Amino acid sequence: MKQSLSIEQFENEFTVFWSNVAVANLDNERLNFPAKETMKEKLQHATCALNEDTGCAYPGALLVHINLMTALAKRIAKMVSGTFSIDEQSLVRICVLMHLSKIEMYEPNDNQWEIEKRGLNYKFAELEGKLKFGERSILKAMEWGIILDAEEFEAIRCLDKENEEKGVKYFESIYTTIVRQANELAYAIEKEKHNRI
Figure 1 (cartoon, rainbow, N blue to C red):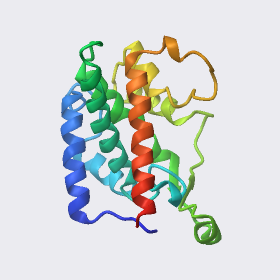
Figure 2: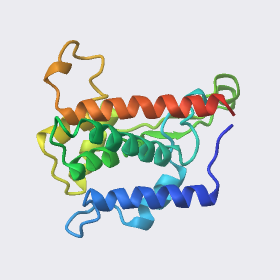
Figure 3: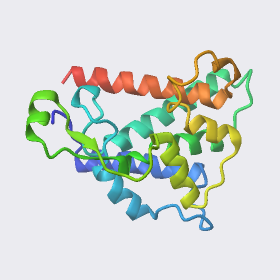
């Protein structure tokens, strides 16, 4: 693996992540959201992609991606705030929850040939049900007692439906548009950084 996080980098990233958890009110004691140390342990090993070429396939990459996407979403929201009314708590909740299912969906690849020849550092874990990552993240949110409104639900699932419905983007919520753009930008930035290593 070309990329990795130092202990200090991970700690800094996790501090940013947990502050976003607080902004999203997910650390509310009425919820079953994982405790700080539990989430920290899970994110330390979690990846955001399967293939090394993405720049997101290393331990801790999921944490980095969530933080970058959240920061970009906040900036985009600020740019359009004169036209659209955007609730920052709701936007951050979407960003924090959206990719968390990848903690369970991806696992280290045990096929050395695929790692060396194809850069597939990770593989899909065997899980019940045929659900995409947004759907699984919504399922996790439900397990944690998090109630999502319609726009949050739509935005968390927006990347699942990219190839399903052509021409319906005109009817999507502003949260979906912001999150989709922030996610695409985050992936592009991470890939470019990887290419420069």
